Image (cartoon, rainbow, N blue to C red; front, top):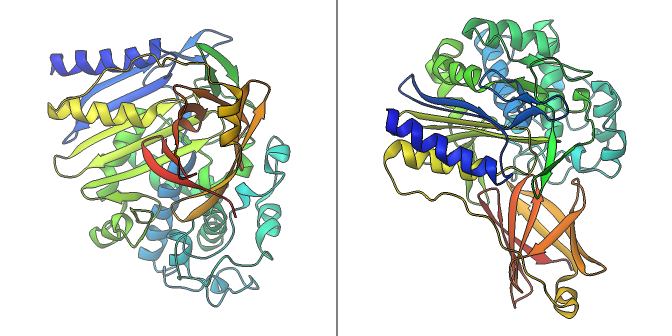
Length: 422
């Protein structure tokens, strides 16, 4: 036990010293906490350290909690996941064809409001759920409901509205009463406005320097990504799931109902073999909570650096816990590449992850190569060789430009292929 803790601490500390992590981690097995620690600073301006009790925005991990709420309401007889959404949201376009199940599995065909032009310009000001819904409700569907999967935050905002109408409580109050309180998750919830005491501030890291990210008002994330939590609370949640849901509901939560790009998807969580993952990325924060069912191993990594190596840390912590080989991180070495080589890579590319298509624009800026993925801030592509580059976006990204014109990306542990746009 002591040796495991030392190895885990050395691993995460190495990432922290390289400027590749700031946050908190926890590892548990069969309900027993093996390791929990905070690293870096929750607030650099005030020199506040991160601890296991620091609260972080968890982004899309919120979706799993939203799914739990829907399944609880189904158990109470207030709805069925097979219900057409028109039964709960009268007048919604195609409300007779789109079901709650489609929203829970990202198979509704409703476009994602987060990737629309102009989102980053308005994200700092409060916005009502009605205004968010009005922004996407009349847009054409990407495909017929149920035809395929395309990750969409829009469906989860609609689920938040369904939860409120079915329960008579606000979304935040529902999850507080029915999820957090029963499991004594006292430092989890939904907050707006200035960063509360005990919460981390979001940053972007670059060569050991940390810059505050632009402010994102939580109303823009709603039931798709607005919750905050701590590593300890998430461990309580993982152990307490059988107290929140009946066995048949819990099975539906983690069942891979659909698959896209090699990843199975349950209700708000990704499923790969014995591994059930809830992950999130939002402005200033990234996170992952993974339950490895084979040996009942749970690992959660919460970071207040948007471009942290969070998935790499989770993978290595699992290896340490299992006594498997792992590597300590090393500092990346960057090189100078001739401008004519950089020119080969400029252009527009398209790529898919969880069924959602994104565009990637690569441009020259003097002697630098820049990249902008739709919905994310423009950032530098730093060369590690003439063909291999590194970028800091949501998590760490390494890109290999191939002779075929395609780009192979390892994006926060996920393999993605970008192809020249036609």
